[in-house]
Amino acid sequence: MTFKDQVTTLDALIKHPPANSRVIEFSPKLAEYTLADLNPSNRPTKPAKIKKYAADLLSGMWGLTGDTIKFGTDGFLKDGQNRLAACVRTGQPLTTHVVFGIDPQLFARMDIGKNRSGADVLFIAGVQYANHVAAAVRWLMILSSTDPSNRGAQFSNEELLAAYREKIDANRLEHSIQMALDVRRTCYHPVGPLAALHYLFSERDAQKADAFFDEWATGRAKRIRAPSRYLQKRLVEIAAASNNRVHENVRNALIIKAWNAYLAGRTVSKIDMQHAVSDTLPKISG
Image (cartoon, rainbow, N blue to C red; front, side, top):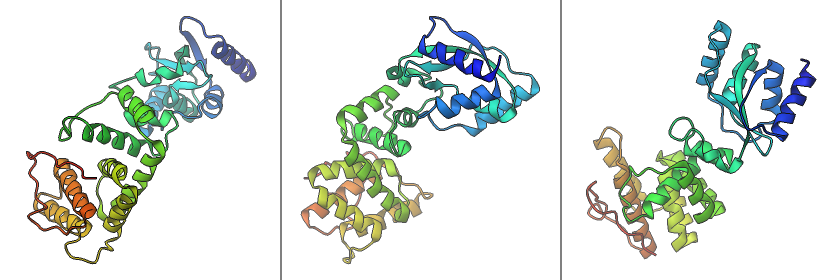
């Protein structure tokens, strides 16, 4: 079968999806066409998996296992890009089951708990900074819950995506992520919880939330006991005393305490900036 015939056959199956899977041999050219033309917003590739699949193809160990490559009703590839990338890399044909007619709205259900992370799902949905957004959304869900100290709370990909689409202002969250990235560049704290806290602070006072994070990132606060300056000092002290680690609840609590003081126009002291892991997380003022 010529390459043109291969493309025609694949396109026909995508446009008129059969009820059952089809066994298809992807030539390297057909795999390359699929990745280039039918894969506009899939998750990032996984080099280790591509390497493994390539080794199997080259050694003749590849076979039909029941795993499928999937195409959506929108005409695009939904699952299988690493296998197709291995086909292109090795120049070896890839024979596999293929399923057509997947509803794009159901992609969050695919490979839950196995391959796709919340960041993968957001990336497929076209969200910028998907890793940071997934972490920030998770922390927003925790911090807005009845148990904001439950740092181990887990949410399904569907819950994360629904929260992002239905409960969160995407533009505001992107701005919060940028503010958190500024802090991380100079103070080396994780973006997810910082972005979530900035987002919550900005609900109270957007200008002051920006000013607080800007002071923290730049160290511009002149007073020794200015909340943002003393916050960083305490976090450095805690990290130095505990193998360069700061418990998430302690970090979140101290950020909230510093914000509350900043909002009230107060300075802080070491007594103010104490928090044990077992303590209740303070409320956000504003």
